[in-house]
Figure (cartoon, rainbow, N blue to C red):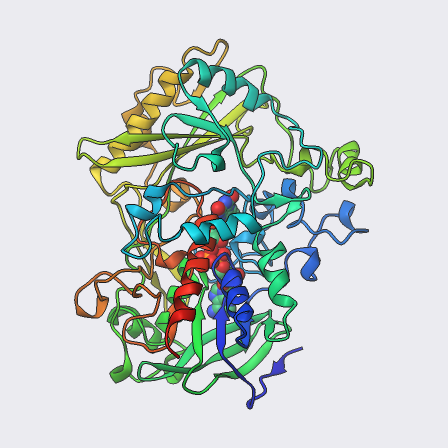
Length: 547
Ligand SMILES: Cc1cc2nc3c(=O)[nH]c(=O)nc-3n(C[C@H](O)[C@H](O)[C@H](O)COP(=O)(O)OP(=O)(O)OC[C@H]3O[C@@H](n4cnc5c(N)ncnc54)[C@H](O)[C@@H]3O)c2cc1C
């Protein structure tokens, strides 16, 4: 049932979206003594917060499919009710956002991730305190099982010996975030206690313990209500059992933090009259038109440009030693002894279901210097999955140093679309992908009995890379960033930035964006830890601003 908003209640901070950016932000703001409302459009996810989506074998437990690491791939088999329906890409729309549905890979960023991409005040040394805070709360683990053992590690073992022989260095990745050139390690996950951990199990728990904190789920923020550059509240729409009406900020000093993800935040800015004129005109001509702020109050900023994602390039090899574990089958027809061991008291959470998951067993890094002189970072993630039961798919992500960018826009039906895919638009980005592939092919060539499925032996890397369309359908990594870039060059006057160094939207007094949207360029690895760090850092900056 929908609840009408109490018109007399006001909040110091309204945080929109409970993902990697929103949850830590809401926690830090409430910790500082402010009255904080966190609004999430989706339903609960993990069991702790009232989630109920689960396979039959979890029916007598408080666990859901989002708690059990080995079930994370279910999002591809059955996304209904867990993902955003207004985004043309995969995005978690439930409590926790991406951190509820993702594969949990959790990396301490390479210094260049900040130094190359971010402006002054956001370099590696600037964010080091925030990094420490994040990793003290969510350290991550390379051995997610409760007994500390690796299960189904045949794929890892096969690559491990041969990479070492080819001169790659094994290390514990988060102990050496600065070593990302011809290094590899066990994949690192934000799991704890054999279950999904991350912001939902840490920051949200501490926030929820405070009287000054409130959480509304199933509630969509449709627009920020503003008078000129000053927000006075937000309009909310009930989605199932949420709230409906207008929520007010504390007069004069209240602030809105938009943390609705790379697509959701851009959409909310558009609906609030902030963005490029062509996009605001789409809103004006949609069902939103009558409620939209008048055009003389529009703030013209390049929201939606600078879209980026790791360009993904999948290769596949097979080897007789590799053994596939059917994580997809674990939904309906799991291996009974594994579910019993996972749930049993004696060996709680100790099986393949713990989470070396289908997502990734082993991760490798290499830095490629292109003919344009730019160093580009490559991360390869290897998982046991593919055409054969002995296959490994190894996905290459091209990150730090990439120059290609795309654009997201909105349709009249208020759905966001990737209108310009950000993949391989720069010739040297393509060159780096090819050089990285050549390097890996070379490094694996000593492995006896290894069969290259794609690219097949004899197919040139150039030909293979060019044969995969540069579209989200074939290249997407689900690591979308960049639609509300942080920087000093104010987008209202021809610059590229949407938010200033305090994450405040240019042209406003009290509207901030804190999530993947503000990232100016892509980083080395999967981005959720870096987004949490950015939120920790932004919280300090926002709290330090004069009221
Ligand atoms: C399938 C998948 C696998 C991934 N695997 C990994 C991985 O292993 N490791 C990793 O680091 N990253 C991974 N990622 C990426 C990572 O999860 C995201 O980069 C990260 O969660 C983005 O954080 P965010 O705060 O920007 O947005 P999100 O986490 O997407 O959070 C945004 C939240 O805002 C809510 N919202 C949107 N609009 C509104 C509105 N109008 N009103 C109220 N609420 C709203 C959404 O429902 C959502 O909960 C994966 C992503 C996906 C989709």
